[in-house]
Image (cartoon, rainbow, N blue to C red; front, side, top):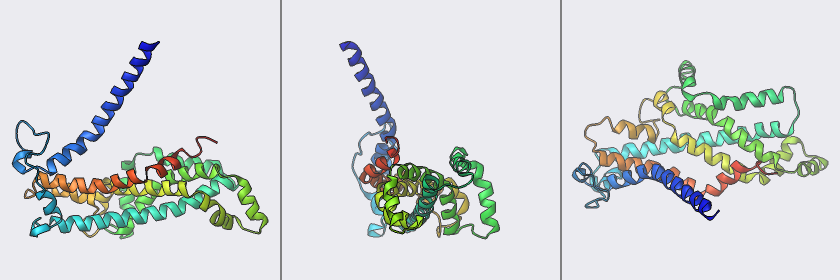
Amino acid sequence: MGTRIMVRVAGRIVTIAVILLWSLFPIYWALNTSFSTLSGADSTPAHYLPSPVVASSYRSVFGIGGAGNGISGQLGRSLLNSVIESGAAMVLTVVIAIFAAYAFARLQFRFKRTIFVSVLATLLLPAYATLIPLYRIMGSLGLVNTYIAVILVYVSGFLPLAIWILYNYFNTIPRELEEAAFIDGASPVGALVRVVIPVARPGIAAAAIIAFLLGWAQFLFPLILTTDLSTQPVTVIVAALDQQRVVPFTLLMACGVIAAAIPGVIALVLNRYIVQGITAGSIK
């Protein structure tokens, strides 16, 4: 029995180690390259630690000392675009999802189950299958290369998941709280705003964080819907830098590290809200 337990524990440790290595090694290698000189990063055999350690790539990204060849301006604008597009999509997604999830969780109306299942079924639809139709729709409305086009596409993609998260969370809230509000004369909307939303803040926070992180990570849709720096997010700009021969790949790695650091920090700091919101409804 003791041997079986040891083998099982060893198997779990090896599995976790492999997963961590698979997940973290690209991040480590990006950091290693970004702090290396161009000759050091291109050396054979590869250096697994920067030798010497330099921060010239990050000085170029931030335009310190006049370096950067315009990279700092491009990255700064693209970061602002990502914040605007992901933040606006997050707000719209959460607001719409709150009312939709509350309706599915509490109200009774015809075809409720059919509509709910249909909404969730869109999660199974490959994103690239909707790319051309969405582009044609935005093109016909004259919205290509605008914030509105990117935000609306993001909302359409994130809304089903946000509704599912909030639907499960609303189902964990006792109905007695709303019934007490109804006795006091509150309408369903009043009960939602005054009673349900304050109690459901962890679930709402989880939906908001996930929507923001998903928006920040998008590449394919903004690549097609945006055409210049005025609306392109950081994911598109970092990929576009690779097409410029004057940009060394150590600088590309520094841009990638900065772009990945923002959602990484958000996910680490707010991890408990994400877990709490996602797991709501699993135990009643």
